[in-house]
Length: 95
Image 1 (cartoon, rainbow, N blue to C red):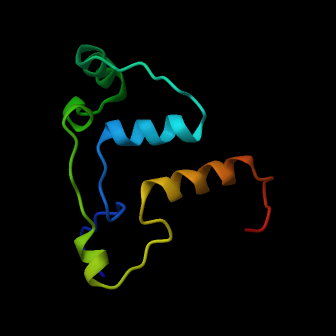
Image 2: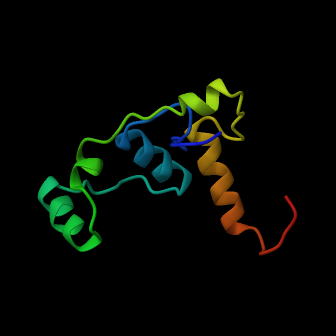
C-alpha cells in the first residue's frame, strides 16, 4: 500500500462520546467542557487548527478496510479498556 492512509478506527465517534467513555473507564463521573474561546486560545500555543477540535473530521479508513485490514479494537470501549490495562501493566509484561 502506498500513498495516504487514514489510520483511524473504523467507527468514528463524537468527542462527547469519547469523553464519556474515558470518564466512565477512569471512574470520573463529571468532566468540565472546554469553551470554544479556550480551545482557540490553546491552539495558538500548540500550533494546531482549533477547528479540528471544534468541528472534528469524520474519517473512515476505507483503504485499510478495502485491503482487508482487521483492527484489534474496532470500537472505542475495547480500545480504551486495553489502553488502561496496558497503563497499569508492568513494563515489559507479556500480553
